[in-house]
Picture 1 (cartoon, rainbow, N blue to C red):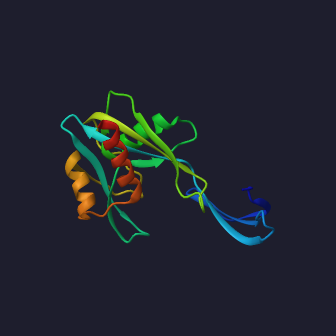
Picture 2 (cartoon, helix red, strand yellow):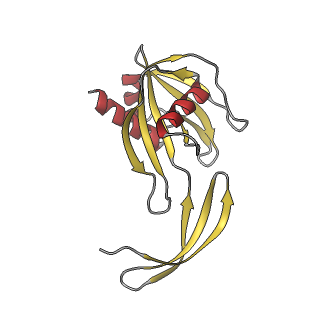
Picture 3 (cartoon, rainbow, N blue to C red):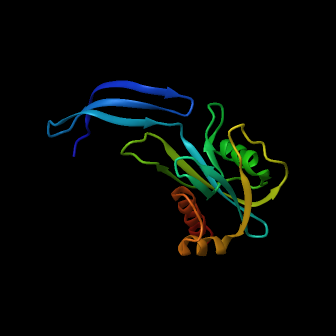
Length: 180
């Protein structure tokens, strides 16, 4: 197989949240796609956060595109001045008020949706977390914290009794596999 060739690129939209790019691409067989759209985002991090009591620290928030409330592991984008580890520790503390004296464990790095997005997500595990501060939310965030028994959360995913997004389910199963 050969890579596609980019013939032309133009930005349709740019914002602090991400950019939309329109490319013209030529496939190895000669076919040209004139309107191939790519969503450019910053890289993301997320973390499975487990307390000393084996409770999973989750955030519940409304997701506009999903039109509902979802349970998620803490997550966010990396700021320009920080490492991935610094970014996830900051995000967890801002969203939940929880911290850990233990170093984050990297569970994996994955492309989010390489068909139309250019960004990656790194998933971490934070163990022996405890509440050390209040949330430090952005003006656009409204987040409820939920503590759920780590094993029970897997049962809730399988039983489909919670609204959960794919990244959180994936992170949970990575952490479960690592801990076994």
